[in-house]
Amino acid sequence: MKLVLRGGRVVDTAGARTADVLISEGRIVEVAATIDAPADATLLDCSGCVVGPGLVDLHTHLREPGDPEAETIETGSRAAALGGYTAVQAMPNTDPTIDSAAVVDLVRRQSKAALCEVIPTAAITMGRRGEQLAPFGELAEAGVRFFTDDGSGVQDAGLMRRALEYARPFGVVLAQHCEDSALAGGGHMHEGACSSRLGIPGMSALAEEVMVARDIELARVTGGRIHFLHVSTARSVELVVDARQEGLNVTCEVAPHHLVLSDESLESFDPLFKVNPPLRPPADVAALRDALNDGSIDAVATDHAPHPPQAKAAPLAEAPPGMLGLQTALPIVLEVLTSKDPDSAVETALMRLSWVPAAIGQISGQGRPVAPGEPANLCVFDPGQSWTVDPQRLASRARNTPYAGRTMTGQVRHTVFRGEAVVVDGEATR
Ligand code: DOR
Image (cartoon, rainbow, N blue to C red; front, top):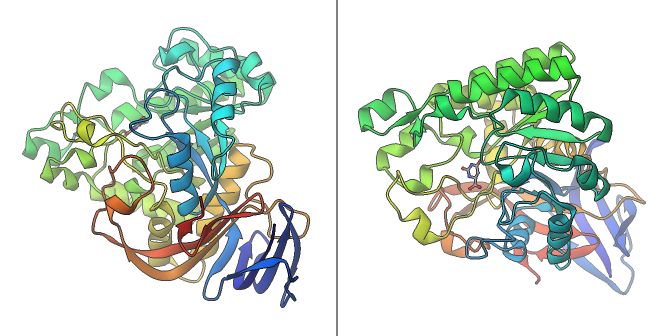
């Protein structure tokens, strides 16, 4: 299959230029001001669009194996491709948990026909029970580079210390969902003025911050590598910034919803706004937006967390936390960054959504420059095009987006995965 991406503005680590891109047999063959399309090539119109490396999501819940009513690798990868992603890391809180090479292999086999690269991650502890470490050696041998008990944090500091020591020689990343369960205290939203007014049990910000601080100390002692998932408070970011300045091997990500939604959304008592970590007060939202713009936050990761309609229809206390994110992340990030600095917004968005996450996840062949010889994993989007979120039109099996009816600016036009146009003119091709 040959493709010519015609007339877009190419943006990557080398900067921006207007160019055509010729793709053949899965690779970029030529990038030039004008390319004469070979007779057997398909032309994709990219006028008015940015052509960049495909987005890379460090944090996607695909629910397979175990909960195909919520999502499957097929439906989740289609949502990813429509959102501009060419790679997603599949979280291990599946059923069974991804904690052995056999389950990694199962996810890989199920991912063969996916519309983007699906990278299995694995749990830090067996069954994510927080008691016994997973076999990092076996899992690293099977190609796993990223370990997390996401959905919950590793509560036992001694176990986390051993995990950091044990992981080191394998060169893998431990990613923490920072939530001290004693401090979180079974709350359903952020603990603060809003939760008090609504009478909803709250979850203290300390639950997150104490674990960020603890793990920074553990990283210092062990020399271990740690990535903080979905940081959501101003203080968490400050702690990470200080640790980074000290030279510790730490990175962090923010989820798009924490950049645009606050705890005030829970005034509706709508479980669509229930998520872990919870939506925070407007002051934290503002701090996270600044931190994304000034580089204090390394990456944006969706925490795409599909749940079936009947689960989200339960009362707030019983509904599971989580929201869809793959098809709305790019416009949200563009909106936030444009509000700070319109001139650099597109390049910074791609940095935080593509090449930096690819580096954090040690994902080869993704987030690469748009240059001859590179694998053709690309996303093409119109940064100025507006659209309205219709939950029924999202590709996910689930419908739990908190953005129904919201207008987003920035729309994916085409996605190219391993040289195949998997999204053309905003529609998935399979
Ligand atoms: O809201 C969340 N949902 N946060 C998590 O950490 C897990 C996720 C899920 O798996 O549903």
